[in-house]
Image 1: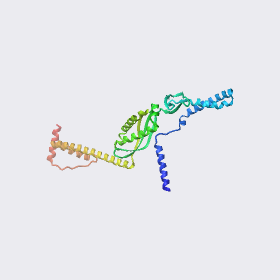
Image 2: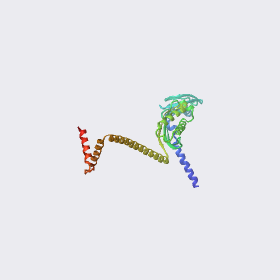
Image 3: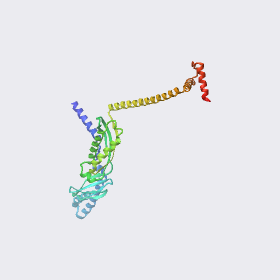
Image 4: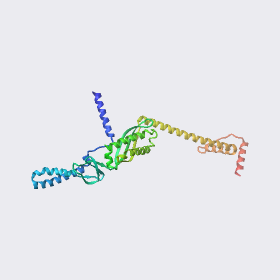
Length: 311
C-alpha cells in the first residue's frame, strides 16, 4: 500500500514537472479577451433596453422575448479585434476572410469566428531540456524561442494547435543540433547551435504562416560527475601548458648560455670581467670580503689587458 502511494506521488511530481517544462501556458479565451466580452455584453444590454422599450410601447409585454432574442442576434454580429489580433472568420465551415483590428461584423448563424490569432512576438521557453551530445553525454539545456504569426489563415488551416506545434518542433530541432556536437565543443558553439536550430525550425514552420525570430540558449547544465571530470581535464590541460611554457623558457635560456660561453671562449678578458661582476654582485648587498687565490703574474696580465682595452 505504501509502495503504491509512493508511486502515485512520484507520478504526480513527474506530471507537475512536465507541466512546468511545457512552454505553452494556455489561458481561457474569455480572460484573454475580456474587453471584447464586456463590449458584447454592453451591446446586448443597450439593444435589449431599447428594443424592449419600443416593443412594450408598441405591442405590449409579449414583445419582450422577441426583443431579447433579436438583441442577442444583433450583439453576436458585432465584434472587436485588438490591434495585435487577426480574426479568422468562417462561413458555413469554409474560410471566408481575415478580420482586421477594430470593429467588424458577422452574419449570425451563417458566419462564425474560428480563432483570434495573436500576432505579437511569442516566447516559448524550455526548462531542463534533456539531450545527448555526439559523445553520448547527457546535458540539460535551458533555451528560449521567439516567434510570431505572420499569416493567420495558414496558422489556423495548416496545423491544429500551432503554439504546441512550434514548441515540440523546437524541442526536436534543439535535440538534433546538440546531438551533432561533442560535449567539449558545446560551450564555444552555442551561437552555432542557436543559428542551426533557428534555420531548421524556420524552414519547418514557414508553411504554417509562422516566422522564427531567434533561438537563444540560456544555460547548459552538466551532471555533477561530468563537471568534476571536465574540471580535472581542464586542470591537467593548464598544467601541461604551464610545463610547456617552462620548458620553452629553459630552452631559450640554454641557447643564450651557449652563445655566452662561445663569447667567453673567444675572449679571456670578457670571462674575467664576468667573474669580477659575479663577485661584485655577491658582496654588494650584504658586504663582506672575498679572497680569490691567483698568482701575481695572472693578476698582472689581466690588469695589463684591461689597461690596454681602456686606451
